[in-house]
Image 1 (spheres, rainbow, N blue to C red):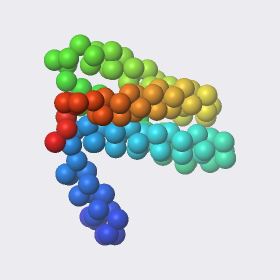
Image 2: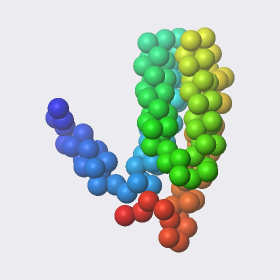
Image 3: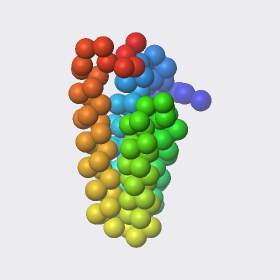
Length: 127
């Protein structure tokens, strides 16, 4: 159940966003959660690290489920997403931030790539 006006705003934003905007929102969430997970590791707050790295993993799983395999790029993205999941899981198990930082770099790069794609004329997924 949604209580705060901000939560209502976020829900409305997600429900009315174009496909490309939703994708960027997923990347933004993954970036935020990986950073918070890394922070948890640095603080030795392993509950915080676990919770946030698991949330980032859930977003990566959502990105995987949204792939359209009619396009050849989807197979490469699947491989990248699976590797990012591996990095996040290993980081969470070992409480070592290096693998999470590696995954974060990939997520940031992919987000920036999609940002450039959405700026192209006739971008796919725009409403």
